[in-house]
Image (cartoon, rainbow, N blue to C red; front, side, top):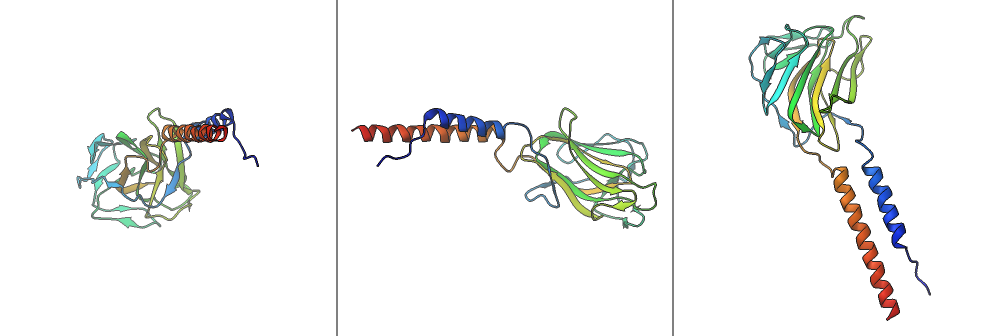
Length: 221
């Protein structure tokens, strides 16, 4: 009775295909409503009208597109039909219908998010969104929060992005008087990166070839 044999070339070919799949590019980000094990980036209660830059937490740099944006705000901030924030924890907000604010990180992240709200009232308040970019300025993912004065997700809730590799360099919130508090980050990827997968697969292939050679020698003896 003959057993099934696998040629070394076929093993290497399968490994190469698997490596190519894992290394073919970054996967899309997942939208998350919590970041287990994440770090809360404490925002000081400074009550500033500013465009930044303001550095806080673990060397997070906040900037805004206008000088009347707010940072470290606790004095009360309205979102029309979506409620009001006041007191602690402090927040940051674009304080305009058409504008953005950016959180830039000293070290790239695998996940970022926070409690987010935006103003909902009339057709002028639309297309509020949150996005992440890599260090080259490439857009990685966007989530529409409100479009055409219609909430696309639940306001005053935690939203964020998570990726399999740590390549999130900046987090941008845009339009609709959007505000954020409780910024939370996660520095390292929770799963092996493509390079790690490649090494693991090559190792498995080498083990398979070694086992096959030993079986062949045993059969000859």
